[in-house]
Image (cartoon, rainbow, N blue to C red; front, side, top):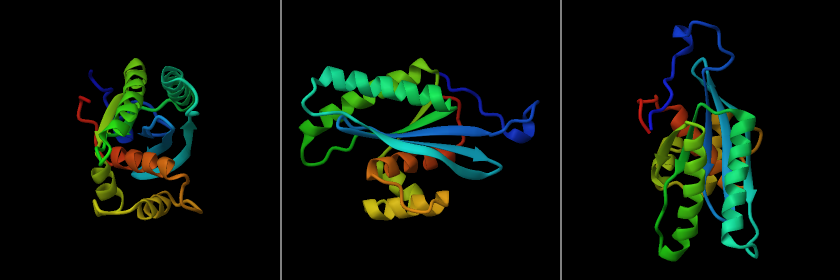
Amino acid sequence: MTCRTFIPISQSPKVLKRSKRVLGIDPGLASTGWGVLDVKDGRILHVDHGIIETKAEKPRPERLFFIMQSIRSIMDKYKPDEAAIETLYFGKNVSSAIPVAEARGVISAAAAERGLCLHELTPNAIKQGVVGSARADKKQVQEMVRVILSLDAPPKPDHAADALGAAICAANTPMLGKS
């Protein structure tokens, strides 16, 4: 898939209100974090953030469909130019990665449906990009996201902060023409 070409505001034939909008996503079956940022005149500006929650008692296909529909709604509302998603992290329990992988799949499909360039970032790359250390903990990420976006309080829950962190990293990465 070819990503849309990003034209810097200074080279655009018309005046744009914003130069780039980025949707960040921290995928999960129970809780998917999302965050939307604008990049304008070299500044990263917070637009909105939140989480998509699904109930464990619902069948997995229904939960995945709800995540996909919710991401589509967010994309329709905010009209991002590109998106960033956290890659899968395999900890001690590999079986818990399967539902996350499925959530990533429906989110990736929704992004492809909209023709969005999808940056895939490891959790360590997000921590490094936001905090400056791949060993940063959740509270450090939340606090640096607060500082970078000039928020009054750290974004909560941590899934939304992680999504904003992914968006910050993508906002600082020029579009290279391919996802």
